[in-house]
Image: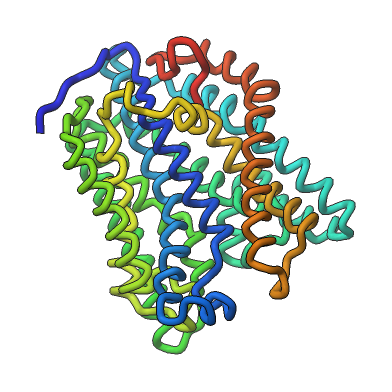
Amino acid sequence: MVASKPSASRYYRPELDVVRFLAFLLVFLHHTLPQGDDPRIVHSIGKLAPFLGAFHTACGFGLSLFFTLSAFLICELLLREREATGTVAVKQFYIRRVLRIWPLYYFALGIGVAIAFFSGDYPTVVLQMGWFAVFLGAWFSALHGWILNPVSPLWSISVEEQFYLFAPWIVKHLNRKSLYWFCALLILVANAWLFYFGYASVNGHRIANDTRIWADTFVQFEGFAAGILLCLILHGRLPKFAFWQRGIFFAGCGASWMVACYGLHSRFIDVAENPGSWPLIGGYALGALGSILLLLAFLGANPKFLPGWAVYFGRISFGLYVYHQFALDAAYHLLGHGAQVSIKVRILRVGLSFGLTILMAAISYRYFETPFLKMKKKHSVIESQPLAATSSV
């Protein structure tokens, strides 16, 4: 692998915007594709239904990709800041994160409260969203299950925020060797947690369903560790791969996630029982590996080969993620949601919700998020935005 080192004063990679969009698209497919146990699907494709179910489940690793990409970028930017200035401005880091995350996040929570009020679920759902308001949505979801409100997918934002609690401090105070050990500690904790869940469940203690494990902050920290490790290994350089090599990485990502879901049932959505400790450990490790492989498939790619629309969708990907469940619920309300809905209506519903998601995210980005992003830019130490537009990094 031949590598090149970009400018130390800025780090904007448009190919990572494409990865952001792919991560969102995978999450969107996970929330819209039918599961493998859908009777209509089983009747239509027979023995292929488990493969479709595994693909549906594997798309959920798009969230792991978000976490791995976030950790990679945060670590890269903070290390560059430390090399340029001798330290990490922790206060500035938190100001940047607040300006990027909080306005849209709390705006979405406000919409969720309004929906709960008009649907008659006001007391219960608002109490649940109190956990989200203090960035404990992941813990609520892990302990009590998903809430019945379009803000439910935003539990993952609380995992991000918990990562931010220690991210600037470790880069400020640990050298590269110590950062490797820190990543090893995160992976050890994640896998110890997975081992406990698997062992306890198969021995009669029904403490861990898929939601309990997937929404657990400690489990998801393995994806963050993967992103930091990739950053450390590349050491600020961009990999130079041939197109066929990138294709192998891309295929390897898909294979890793499918083995995790079809072979190991690590996300046991379509099966009744917890698969046990070792399939959980192996499956989540493959989830992190797939995220790294997908990043390598794009990182360092020639920008002129990137579709402009995909780069743009990546820039508004935070809004796409935040609004997509609102759009899905609106499409369900307009076109129906039930076992009797025809295949054509289901396809129309997916198309409508996807288009509505893009529309909402584009308007939000242009008129609501951009003023905050301009303020965020003033607190940047290492430039991480495109030269003529505002990035979502």
